[in-house]
Image (cartoon, rainbow, N blue to C red):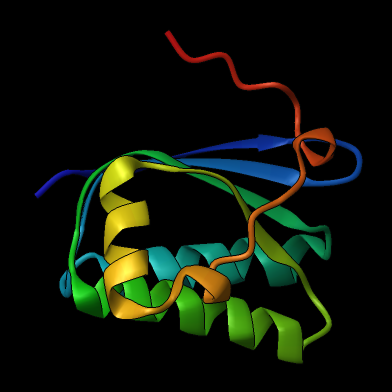
Length: 113
């Protein structure tokens, strides 16, 4: 399994690009890293999941739970892009509304080829 994170810090938010495969083994690692970034910096997290090539049901539920935990702590996690794989599984599991999408103006433009 391959999973990577690339973190870019801006004045008003942190942009996290996540790439690879998220499953029952790697999802807890991803959750902990996202929450640590959020709590250490106190600025909103914008997470780009466009480069996720595989995700399982456990991982999608854990991402939704991570967003709920952030909301309970008055913090913010939003997604700027979802891969087709993530979008499809979110729809199948009924979790689309639990993965908040940021407006285009909230993040730096992301150019896709």
